Amino acid sequence: MSTTHPQAAHAAATGGREAPPARRRRNLRRATAPWAFLTPAIVLFTLFLALPIGYAVYLSFRAEKVSGLGLGKGSRTEVWSGFANYADAVADPEFLASVGRVGMYGLLVVPMMLGLALLFALLLDARRSRARGFSRVSIFLPYAVPAVISSLLWGFLYLPGVSPFYYVFDRLGWDVPSLFSSDLVIFAVANIAVWGGVGFNMVVIYTALKAIPSELYEAAELDGCTQVAIAWRIKVPSVLPSIIMTFVFSMIATLQVFAEPTTLRPLSNTISTTWTPLMKVYRDAFTRGDIYSAAATSVIIAVATFVLSFGFLRLVQSRAFGQEK
Image (cartoon, helix red, strand yellow):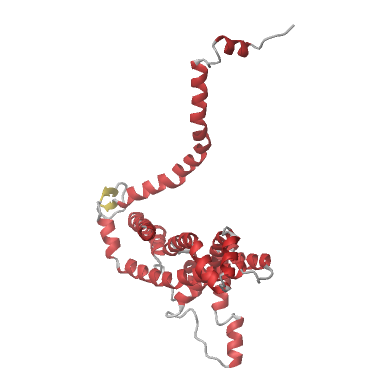
């Protein structure tokens, strides 16, 4: 004696077609499933990124009005200031000086860091390279060290009184100037960034190199190309998108440099509280208590970062599109 499942009997009775309510429920589950997975990320993004950014923009258009001596209750009120905070920030000589220092810092850090990362990636990808695993870990390891720790380590190596390097220089009779001098301190800060950032960029470029088909190398060798020619004509053009990506990341990190000079500041009197734009934001917000000016300056930095990054990507895309034509 055979039994028939109710759902099978219903499907047979309806000619194999699913009932409209069941089909709607299934379509609803399919439509809502992606949003269920995205909900935690959306909530975190809203609470910890979107809302703080919006509040900072709101504060940048506000100011504190002091009535009387500013001592009684209600003597300090928050008022609308328009673009006054932005005008003051752009005209501030300390802010303009910090922008100039960051620009010079970027000219030192970004080309050197990406150049070393590309060089190390090409050397690791070469056929004659040895101990690739150990070399990758050794080059990448400085990136795993927090910026504050690496700044402290390098800071004590820069101090003539405790640095073993200056001890050796003194024994050799060499008169080496201090890297904390006003002329050389920017190189001291840039060295820490290069030391810590080469490893990450090298891994990105090296991963892109491993994705290149080996048939291209074999064809180039049959044509008589040397390893240097293969690296310059095949490898570098193939990993150009990765180089562009690392350049954008490095440029963003350069505009937001904060940890290294802030950590080195107690060891030197040549690094001011406004040495970088973000240091000025921190000084205004937490030392002077002027959160409105700090908010305006932070918004300017964010907009400048977005404009430079987006503008560079558009420039690269337009040139690539023009070459394809």
